[in-house]
Length: 375
Ligand SMILES: C[S@@+](CC[C@H](N)C(=O)[O-])C[C@H]1O[C@@H](n2cnc3c(N)ncnc32)[C@H](O)[C@@H]1O
Image (tube, rainbow, N blue to C red; front, side, top):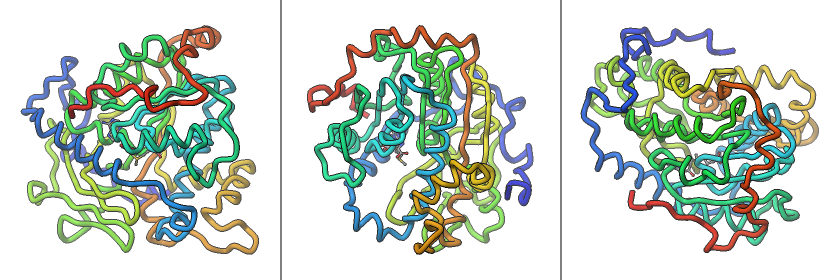
């Protein structure tokens, strides 16, 4: 909706796929500093590992509680739109398993979650088992699950998950931009998604909207944008606010969101993401800024009802509390996307795959596979 209100960055400022030489070997024309990449991956992992579970009271008093509820609504809508009963799901960067209940509602058949942050995977494990005092937990989940801890933008996941694949759905919520540090990592992320999805399988996700961030940066006086709940700061190397067309990876900024995020992130020019995804047989189905997404799916009665239940915009009755203007501005910084893996759908085949041998209904600490955590 709001998309029309801003100009897209001009093609000379942000890289366009036709100008940028996409190299299948992953060798960028510029130097990829491997150690630096690993340090950043560790920094991101440590940041998320430190964030422990909040109590219901802490959560409800968060300055961005309505934004969190809105984000949950958007993920729920995406999941409900594209998931079918008995689907096998791969949740890349699953975090603490905040989406487990959404997958339960979609009646999936199998779940594999992977995240780089050890603390988050442990929280995910206890949440899945129903051990922890999570406010959402009522009964055990009805699908078997498997958890892995590792860098899913570095590891060749198709080898590790050979027995579990193919998946019907791959989800990467609020995390794909952590792969955009180098071309090699971005390619690994998309190669993993593509290799693990069945033909016709669906890749859903959410990530920052680079167009909005760059436009806001250009409108700002300095190298920082923000409001009462967030700030984004670019380094002095971007003082011209120009971005080299041949280097669409590794464009770093620091993101601070009250009570949520405080770590380095990377700009993902969407047209580059789309071209790269196409190389890996992933065809774009949908891309929408969160503002547009909300306006569009609020028109559907079932999703409007879900919004009332989640309470992001108040419950329509006594609870009039709603998203603040500053939280709504943060929502504008994000987009949702859907891709489909090229090829004929062969859904029945995925059900008989040997994946359930790896899945557990109760996950012990020893069941978690830790992969190459020397990041
Ligand atoms: C904003 S959180 C989102 C968590 C979850 N997807 C959700 O929507 O609730 C971002 C997550 O990405 C994870 N992450 C970042 N880089 C990663 C990587 N290279 N491999 C796996 N997970 C990663 C973080 O540990 C964190 O849990």
